[in-house]
Amino acid sequence: MWPDSDVARRLDPDVILDYLPARESSAPLVLGPGARLRSGTVLYRGSTIGARLETGHHVVIREECSIGDDVSIWTGSVVDYGCRIGSRVKIHCNCYLAQYTDIGDDAFLAPGVTVANDLYPGSAESERHMSGPSIGAGAQIGVNVTILPFVRIGAGALVGAGSAVTRDVPEGFVAFGTPAVVRGRVVDLPDIQARVEAVQGSAARYRLAGRAT
Picture 1 (cartoon, rainbow, N blue to C red):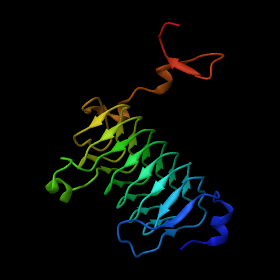
Picture 2: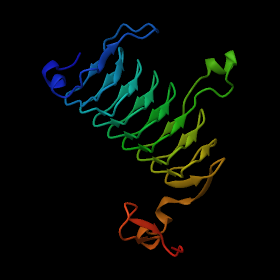
Picture 3: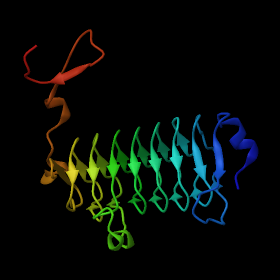
């Protein structure tokens, strides 16, 4: 179910809506108004998506997902079945959200974030307890972060690039490393202007302050 005239104006020719999953799903796709769906996007039957979804190219959203308003999911990302994503969430390129992942409003996932949901792959008992992590409202997840099953990342937390998150991160705290370790509070981070200096004539406009040329 979607407003045909609205979608047609903002839908690339090879977008697929209401794709039939291998898993049984009787409910139709529900897609809110104002969507902008780029080529290669596939939205499965049985998901409910709010207003103004925007996708990059080759985005897949599986069945039984609940997605809020004003969500953007960029090129090459996959949202597996049974996920819940709040409003105004931004998921950057080449991310994978495993089944049963929960993301709060206004969260951000940088490129290459991978989420797991199976603690002991190949174990039938582990499969019965399959669950992705919970990422709190406004949390910011850096480039190429891996988040393991059952982890809770609190609202407003910041996870540094390349981290492997194996334990909970409290609300409003910074964690990084492999495995990720809580290092301090977001509000105590130094001002960005004190950490960088301008570079003339380069597309990379800034560098870390105090570094040799």
